[in-house]
Length: 370
Image (tube, rainbow, N blue to C red):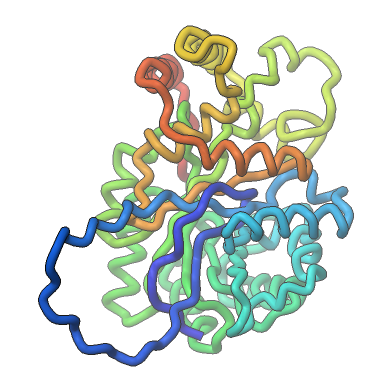
């Protein structure tokens, strides 16, 4: 199943992918003759897309009706791409999506699905483990093919040529359409693209990486690399794991907190180490002050402002088919996130405050690669 054409414009989504349409074959039509009157206006620029992601800890406990309602709300807004991974919620997120009866991976399915293989917890990106993870994901998702298959992170114990050759074989077997990379350094992306091209293997076309208003390390070297090799960028952690919602205080780390990104799960320590810095909270306060000054009583929430920054003021470009991956802990939160992605640009003073916030925390920005 090969697909051509760029995805349609869309808004945001919960950590999965969105915005794609399957190209149809149409008969060629003769060019129209000369036109008179006003020239046809240029089409509007393509918007940055949104994906629905499933990495949130909420997918461990979410029940089928709730997950179905969330996916339905996402799709009803014109989004089509869902993002998951072998490891998310110990495989539960893939199983939940597979049980929704969406017909994932089918030629007539309008919903596109992405998953990932990883080198952690005794696994690797060697051919046998790569195949085992992908085939397990396909069983959970109840499909014979995924639209996008990522290498979730580098496997520094396996020669990359071995991994890429195995990916090409799986692609030839029809188990996935596009190859993606996640959490690789820019030099590794360049090496992979060069190796794939020289060996005639499937080339990666998507990179999924960490990016938000106060985490911009990808802009320096990775983005120029992706533009050079023609990869689109899908941003995860657009709200810095929830820190950019403004609902946390730095002192919260010292008390008992509800289960979430930063507390009560196996990834909590990683997320606290990544984002829970005193300078980050000062940066958020700086932006909140600018929001009040610019908008007064009608100020958008910190969540909305952070997502508006992603869609209108970041280095993401609709022309490159870049996208934002949104997560959720509830249907209500998803609705709020989707509404935020449909808002317009921020006031210049707020954009400037976000820039000042970035400069305040740049010295301790987490690495985008692993």
